[in-house]
Image (tube, rainbow, N blue to C red):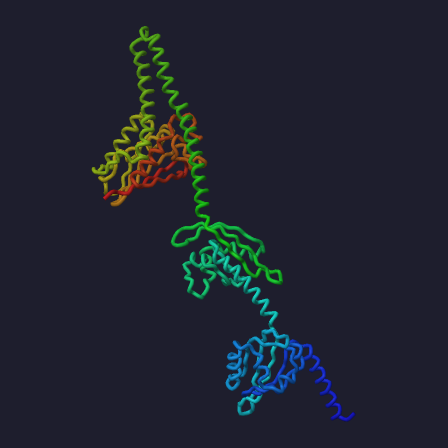
Length: 497
């Protein structure tokens, strides 16, 4: 075999292989003129398999294929073919009547070849039957439309988030929650979605590949709204989380109901605790003076005529002291009620702060029988201010009384007054027993007494009266441990104009 014969044999072999490939290929290959009437010059034999028509039917009649195009699609197909003069590449989809008398969807692509001068000389194209694909897509589309309709009608917020942090779908209710109008074609960004759903929960689903439930506060229609959100993973064919679907529901009313129940339960617990502390206080604090009064009265009735005037006077004084103690405790209870209701507050007259401090110090020292040294320090130029004298006296009297009561005899107590044009500070320093850390949370609760007070008498109302009085004046109170032992109570009171 000479060289020419060998080349011819190789060409025949190549053509044979190509024909075999075309015979089994789903794509029909063809060549056409680039001008009207677009005469088919060559078409692969597998056209008979794809359309049911023989290659000759396409080759002999230039209008054969055009007559089989669906009438509604024919104008579009002709318009596309007319662009061969201008374009390098065409792509279209249309319906084609096959030999089974059914319209099939064809996908067609044409490459336009040009000569050296740039004039179109041939169109090389192919088409494939995509009917099954289009039917499948239509079924998916109908399914999607059904689920979309359900999602759009839902009163839940439904959002589909991709692994690339893009929003693939968001229903109308979620759009409204974000203030995203229906006519906006651009979907919200990932950053917008984080206003409704915590990012940590979204990332948790991508990382763990498990559903997550979370509750969080969001601003919807300018109102704080509690959302309960299920975040569910949607897997790809490679079994990786491709999307996270978030379904969020307004649970504000549910949370408010739960919080109301919690508050009611807490209030009931506090009331029970208050009752217990009140009973404990009355049992210990009221019992002692009442017992003193009763025993002294009984002794006076039995032995009074035989006692000396001095002894009778001693028991009478004991009765008076016990009665005064009872009166003081009852006054404390009434004062708590007064300051809580803001009854009797008077801001019409100015109060001399320095004079009031001296008066209270004198009263405390007299009651304390000068067992403690009380130092008074004033810083600032303001002395007369518009405030409620009774509430301020309550603050000074109870803080100083506690300071001397819980300090060892001989220890110093300091009252510090710092005045400013728009407010003033009252600070009471002592080196007493302090407040145990576990008792500080309930420091200002009525009838509450720390475990370290031991047998020191008291109602547990002093600091309650101070706190309520400070609040009545629009101020604030702070407590801190003093280095080396003791306490510092600081009260800041704003001035009335």
